[in-house]
Length: 160
Ligand code: FES
Image 1 (cartoon, rainbow, N blue to C red):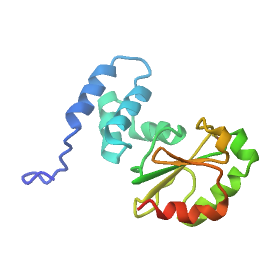
Image 2: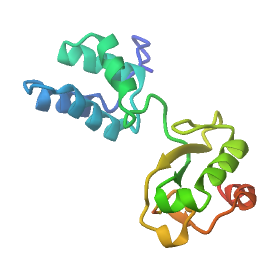
Image 3: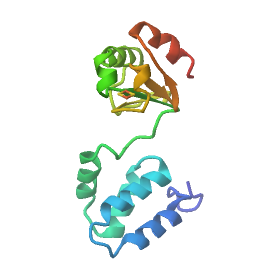
């Protein structure tokens, strides 16, 4: 917060302006700008969406429309621990859905959501290349394999 004008000061705004300047003249600039802005902030906060809207001359309702249409974009920050549960073919046939159900029950969140305390974000993925260990989930890149639903609370308890 700026002491004088009480406006929110965004330390990354200069980089965001560079992204906008880089893509401004391209046709279809919105998607690459959103991707790079998300790379910069980790998600797409409201003030960033408004800044992009002004920068590209696209109504913010339209920018929101694009952000909410594509699963790759996030309007909320990621949790401290990102659970990626696999529902690819091998994991699916070996009980991946039951593992997912146990995670949802324990964390009280669904795919794409983050717990209120910011501890977990849950995402469903298709194959993480560990089919031999199916069903599989990874937390912050650590792979947990040959899972059953009963193991979930104990594993999640390791991640604070
Ligand atoms: S299908 Fe789950 S790791 Fe490949």
